[in-house]
Image (cartoon, rainbow over all chains, first blue to last red; front, top):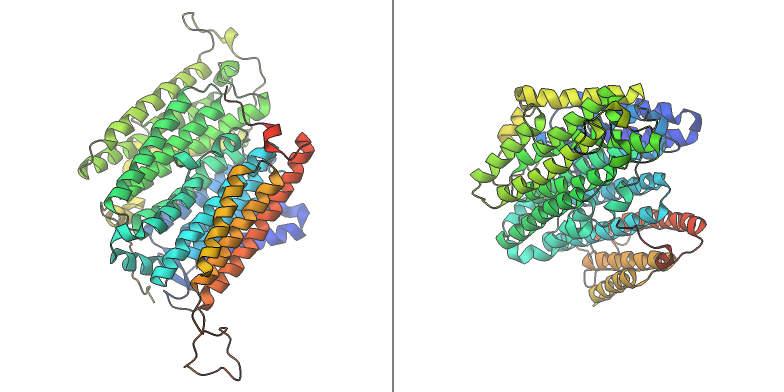
Length: 477
Length: 114
């Protein structure tokens, strides 16, 4: 039986080794990501105790269906994205190994303070990666906001510790449920603000524009899919399973998520640069998924999260590659770019349509379930907001696709002669990665049972309208 | 009450973050914020008349009143993380100075909204 702590320990070890043996650090990174992706497939569910102290006193790792889905997505996407953009690694191989360890730790840990440590590790790697664009003032802006956010998270958890005397999530969820939620507004709100900075919820996402709009084909997909997925999994763990929110606080935070969705989609509509469109779309999707988690609809939130992570990995890889090789990602300048790169173009189209939620693709299944789930929980305003957001998303995505496939102005017949003359190159490694990811989106859409069966147990466990934290308090030991 | 000292420092730190435009001063404000947080965390573990949570040849029986050692361990970790963030922030400050020739964020200007 493989202990999941290896998913955290091995990348960290390899990161240290890679600093000593600098010449081999890229090989070590590939080895580490392959090893992690392999290890994920051999894991058994359960609770793993670190250091021999029984919970709730010691640190434990919790590998339930929620965490298993999380590390599957994180390690799988990390592997694909790294292999797609090996030429962009520059000096970042060691940082990426630490990031992998941090992201796995975030999803696995069952202890609030341990979560803070992994949050900081992950965030520090994100600050370093965001400096890959050489726009240090944005990286600094992100650093200040991120540090303030995790500081507030720490403040919130220490208040909880002072009240309940425990940091173990399962123990805390039981103890918090016994108290009137209106008395826990302060720590809940502090923890919400702390996580909202990383999850990109509305008033706390000022860093996103500067950081995401300059990303290359390695950092962009990493941020928009892997980091976003990791942070959203943490958000879901905390707010759907550990901290019970009172009715008023829950409603106002769901409204905040819905506002983030609408604001992100509207801002994306007004943009012309491809990466800016995608980054505002990322903000919108984060708001949507956070609102679902806050409503207690864990299963559909995870489905939408998976859809968003897979789609954004493709979209940001192509957009980053466009910017890297042509020097611009202005939609107007790249008209007809896909005529020369049909496979990448089809992948980009599949990802964009899946993100909107059109049939044939996984996005349709997730959006259907999501709308049903909300209706069944007797909420009738949120589906309206989501559908409105979807219409706006469809508008700008289809507009972008039309521009990239059919060059020429409106009203005249599109001809190849109008296509961009900028030299767009897409390496075969990227094309292969894009094909793999789009095939997953297609399989998810055409044969939803395949993906669903792998989540079946989680289906029965996570598919509950009321939050439930799903493992034995004292562990399986 | 030591809690209030911690909260005051946290508020001073946030005030600094909101009002300063010099990068070094922002990093200092961030450190004051973290310092206040650490003081607050330590204060949570305070027990009146408690002694340091260390077993010695003199203090080795069950009847002793200890202060809570867990917040102290947490603060130790938080200090190390704060050090890492500060170092990275200063490295960014140096790169920004090289790029723009100033440490004042107002003089650098923000992203265009065009």
